[in-house]
Each structure stands twice: as C-alpha cells, then as structure tokens.
Image (cartoon, rainbow, N blue to C red; front, side, top):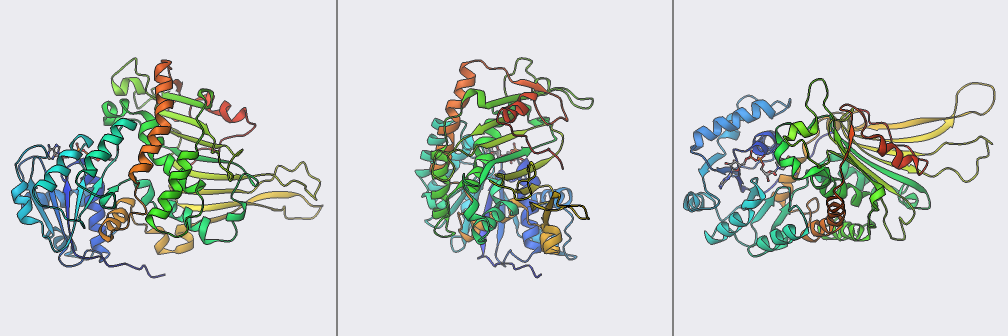
Length: 483
Ligand code: NAD
C-alpha cells in the first residue's frame, strides 16, 4: 500500500517555547519526520522563539540533537537533515517584554500560512496573543496552537478563552489534545461511521457497558510539582478521557467537518450525569523497589492529589441511558495500555442451551500495538457436541496494513500538519473545553470540600482494590491491564 502524502502550502511556523521539553521531544522530531515524508514544501520554515541567548546556528545544533535523541527509527536519505536544518531560524524573545518582537516581525512573511505554536506555560498565552497582534504579525488567516492544560477549572478556562478571543477568532485557535491525533482515535470514527455493522448496535439496547482505560507505568518523575497541583482528573480525565468518551458516544455528525463533529461531542459532554461520590475511586501509588511513592515523589507527605482515578459515568440521552461508562487512568500501573472496550449484551436466548456467558467484546487499542479486536463466539473444534468458545477477530494495524500500519505518524506531527491545512476537526473548541470543566469542577470541589484522602495502591498493580469493587457492585469486571 502506498502512503499518500497530502501537500500543504508554504508556511512559517513559529514555535514559542522552541527550546522547551515539548519542542525537543515531540514538535521538532515530528516536523523532521514530515520533512522526510516530503510534506514540507519549498519555502516552509520553522522559527524557534524562546528566552535565552542563542542564534540560528546554535538552534540548528539544538534541533539536530533533539532529532538524534527523539527522532525515532525512521531514517531519512543522506543529507536530508541538513536540508531540514536550513529551514530553521531562531529569535530570542520575551513573551512579557519588547525583546525580539521587531526581529520576529521582520522574519515572518505575510504571503504564506502563518502559524504560532504556544509551547509555553499557559500564563504566557494572553501575553503572546496580545504581542502578536500589537506587532502586526497576524491577519485573519493566521493560526495559533495552544497546548494543554487549558485552564485548571471553568473560570480559568473562560478567562483564557476570553483573552484569546480578544485577538483571534475561534476559527484561528487550535487547542491541542494530542490524543485526538492518534491513528486509532480517528479510526474509532472510521469504524463507527464507515461500517454498516456497528452503528445499529451502538446503543443501550445492545451495549452492556463501555470501559475506557489509560494506564501508565511511569510515576510523576520530575513533574511532581506540576502534577500535584493537577492530579489525574485535571491532567487526564478532563481532556483525554473526555475526548475519547465523546468520540465513542456521540451521534453521527452529518459530515466529517470540524464544527459538525465538535457540535456532537459537545452534546455528549452536556448530557453527562452528575457523578455520585461513591462512583469515584481515587488512588495514590506506594513506593516500589525502584521508585519513591507518590507523596515522596511530589515532596508533600500530606498530599491528597490522586495519581489514579476510576469512575462510573452515565449519559442521559436516548442512545445511552442505562449503559454505564467506566473510566480509569493512573500512573505506576502494571502495564502501559490505552484501550476502549465496548462490551455487548448477552444474547436474550441461546439455542445451545448453555449457561451462556458469551458476549461480543469490541476493543480498540490506542497504545501500544494499535489495533481493533472483536471477540466472537464460535464452536469449539472437535467432535462431541456443540461447545462454544470465544475467539478474537484480531486486526492489528501493523499486520493488516503492512508498512503503512506499522509506520504510524506521531499524533503531534499529524496535528501540526492539520493546523497548516486549516483543519480544526481534531482540535477542541472553546465551548467543549468549558463544558468539560463545568462537569469536572463540582466533582473536584466535592472531594476537596470533604477533604477526601485517596486510597493507596501498589506500584505495578492494576490500581486500588476499591476500583475492582466499583465494577463488582454492578457484577462486572475491568479488562486486564495488559501490554
Ligand atoms: P519547558 O519549561 O520545558 O519550556 C518552556 C519554554 O518556554 C522554553 O523554551 C522557554 O525558553 C520558554 N519561555 C519561558 N518563559 C518565556 C518568556 N517569558 N518568553 C519567551 N519564552 C519563554 O516547558 P514544556 O515542557 O516544553 O511545556 C510547554 C507547554 O506544553 C506547557 O504549556 C506544557 O503544559 C505543555 N505540555 C508539555 C508536555 C511535555 O511533554 N513537555 C506535554 C503536554 C503539554
């Protein structure tokens, strides 16, 4: 199968925070891979803008190091790196002062697509938006890319939206949730809306329940101070898990168009039930042989922030009333695994007369080993009567699609190219983000108000025992967290 590379127009991409961790690990290596794929036309340039004295030559060395460390295995032809580095410029800039803005204004061209990636802390977003405008660096076709976290509650998200709206129209603002850039997440929409098979069954009449799991094996590492102010609910549920929930639960949009898709996602968030406190389990990991426990890692022996959360969520609409959605995410768990599982109901009558516990289970793996598996019931081979057995109809993308399946574009590079193309489908709209905070705020305020202390769980386990109970009460079980 031949990979199709859709060309983009020439552009100037300015990365504010171009020397930061995210730029080094994700943005710059991702851009290089797009360059290797032939997707950076002549005249496309990348301009790093950050604090600190550096000239363009030093920045090119910085970029080369980042690619060597984080560029992955995909190799480019000899000499390609030099060609990519030629596209790099650097400007020392102060987001809060005057330094560097005139120089940037001289560098950025007005006859190409202009995109500004705000890869800096959110406290600088308003300053950047204001200065871009004040220095005449934008027009109606310019775009800004905004990183997470987008606020830490509804008022702060509203304030951010308001600040950005002073200088940019909503159609120019690209709020990144890199989960939406993952291949399988988009495949979720292709599977649902590109097949006759699933959509008629995609409702509470046929679906028993849905599980969404995002499990990490790493702890908070060096991000302890940031993470402790946030926790799993703000860091993962309000954005990534919520987006997955929206895509799995939304009504079919009338077309695959940014606002049609985002309108449907917004309706899901607005239809979410208030979550009962006893439907939430929060946890903190204990020390393992190699790593300190959560409280030690964040340097606060009394921290009440959760590194794990599991919850039962209901959606009050015609499609989903009565079908629970179980969400869980956490750090220092047994395996790194992100998966959405749709568990269908049992047959209402089995002609085989078994105490049939056979159900179809559709699981969509986001990482690792992206793919889709459908569990189907068949006859166990051999003579001696009709015994049933569940087997997986397994479609690993790497196997099914050959090179194209294995060689998957990273979420960041896909999303950056969408920005250049002006396609907002895989970015969060301002009202979506606000609706998500409006749903999570009362939950967070509730447990903060009650002074709730998270349960503990062993590092390398599947999470707190109480999370098992959450499903056991409904006579259900979590899928095993497996790589
Ligand atoms: P970082 O601290 O590593 O880098 C910050 C960058 O901003 C540096 O280039 C620095 O020079 C620049 N900067 C800081 N103050 C400035 C100022 N006043 N004027 C101009 N430049 C200034 O941060 P990071 O980890 O790269 O994160 C950047 C953004 O991306 C943050 O909003 C973060 O929440 C988000 N994010 C990061 C990751 C990640 O893996 N690092 C993941 C998701 C989201």
